[in-house]
Image (cartoon, rainbow, N blue to C red; front, top):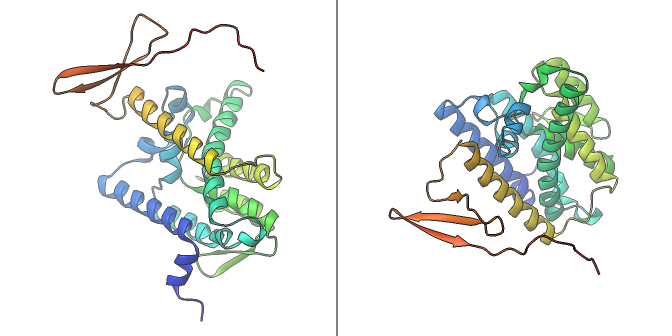
Length: 271
């Protein structure tokens, strides 16, 4: 018999939380009858300022099969949290999950942009991506480099050697699920290799918190500016002085204005 699930949950706290979040979002999407076009990421949405969709598309799944496949793979990849002895572990897992979410989304956008403007493939303007697969493929790739003897277990009965799992899964999903995002999966693999080879490194708590802060800021501002959600308590005012940005917080019908001073732009010397 395998180990009780309770002990595995204790050993994979971050993975368990992410699976819980993705499952709760899927349940909410089903209950509210929300379509993928409302939460997914596409080139057209991005150039219209819907940058928040990089986050919502990552954690959203429309079909239960899509959710089960991704979460099953993610649960198996949660072994990363238990490999602190080789420089991985829970903190590493959280730091680079953040990197995978952001950079894989940016890379997908760049791929779409190249295909549309360089190769004139206008179809990719309207392709909408949704799901956690970018991050899953990223961790497959990292684990294949850091712990090549590991296995990737899917659905509790299918086991793949982790060293071949990224490209095996890429081909498998493309053949079995025609709607699968080949570019999305490929972007996760590319970012995973960049992390595994050390091209992207140096993440610590300071940079993780800073990155998370910027993500929240961009998320809220793009959500507000795109009109997807009305933050009635928060408005950006245009003012005549370009050096004094003004942020207004309406309260009880009388707006209060907060002005932040800024230094005039001029020559800068770096010492």
